[in-house]
Length: 376
Image 1 (cartoon, rainbow, N blue to C red):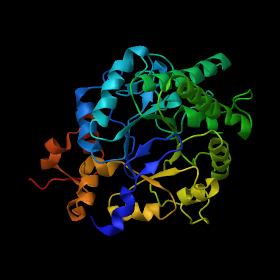
Image 2: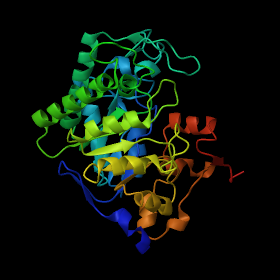
Image 3: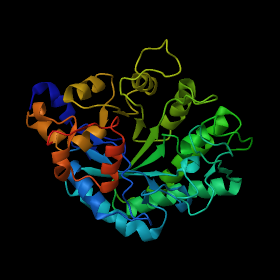
Image 4: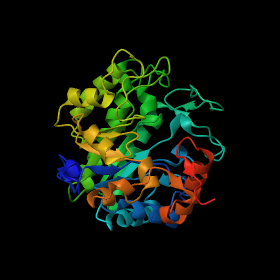
């Protein structure tokens, strides 16, 4: 191994007491490959096993906490009937030596009535997303919001019983937790909205529900993380100042980490063009080293991973690059970083073990991951 990459392979211990072998985590990426009832498919088991070996941890694709919160092909943590299926997924990941973290979510207004079998999507308020063909969601009642909070706790319980090493609360990427925090999607005037402080109530209640489940059911240290999108381009939308205030509250909740979802780990503010400092660095400096941040976004090479750590964050999540190069961590450790693939080749399809739905997505979105047709 090249000595300049040794920092990537230092172990890290979360505040909960869970230790991972190194600083590289597999980022959660949607596979769209689960059965219609949310059970894990063989394709998904093979996909994770192919990539998990040598990593510190794997964060799975998102699993819905209620069946009205799914998208096509998503995992389910919405029923005790799914514990056995989730347990098999946890074991598939852990068999490689990596820790397994289940990401849990509710799709909210990003869902479709077609996927929900005719049921109208729900959200904080009846405001559609600013995207083509977005459906207008139904605003949740106060009772339904409280049921959803409970559902996050129940999903955490199921993750514990399934043998996962932790859960990540998906409060990013425009899904329901973010929808409650956003002034664009949350126009309520009750306990769950109306001011910035009230828009924090749902995220904080979800965190508390997860903590209670861990306290009640976990018999060993269990990771609790939170994923966040720091800004929105919508008007009104989440600002960096909004996020800094939420993160200050989250820091006091005893979370193990904050996973900051940005398109590029070096990305500066989308809303304040005058501020050139990477937004992840701003957040880490704000919360201090005792609240670790996972950085993610277009990290392909070990040099880029080191540059990200140099921002002051302790952990790196690698996403798309692990689709292209499942042996990324192995090659870095063995000093073979020059052989790391950065583009998909058609002749590598069998080796990559991508579920069909993921391969079809890659083929239809060449800008997301370019395919190099070198075998023609």
